[in-house]
Image (cartoon, rainbow, N blue to C red; front, top):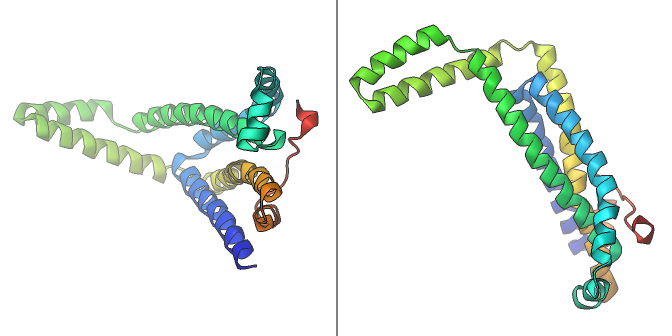
Length: 214
């Protein structure tokens, strides 16, 4: 009973941290960047869902792979497929984050007064390289503040809402493989609490990755 509670608390704590991080990140990014991330996340979910059976079929087509995962590792098809889905999604998501970072950098750069910056940097450069770096850093911080202050309150609210949806999706996908891993452990031991705790936690749901998925 105690172990079941601990696992459930850990799962919910992980999901809560992901949610809080997602909301604050969305607020910092702004609506346009968050919209790109939201659309990209949906695309990553769909793409990962349809690519998972293809990759799973290819892996199980390799001689000895099924025997290796079932007998040596003790993993079920559901565990393998959920892990493939997780890896695919995170690969897509990493690419989305790079795009969002570039877009945000471009939007902040537009907040800078290029003419004034050139004058300040030129003066600092004439002093020494350290002074130049400090001026560049100071001007970039000022542009970030300006970028944040120019956003309307309802844009920030919508950004937080979209960010929370993204974060919930990431939390579910992150915890999903552990549910299947817990079931595999339960088959080989008496640790049934792993399955009960993960699938009964408030932030997880079950996506079917069974034999019909390949």
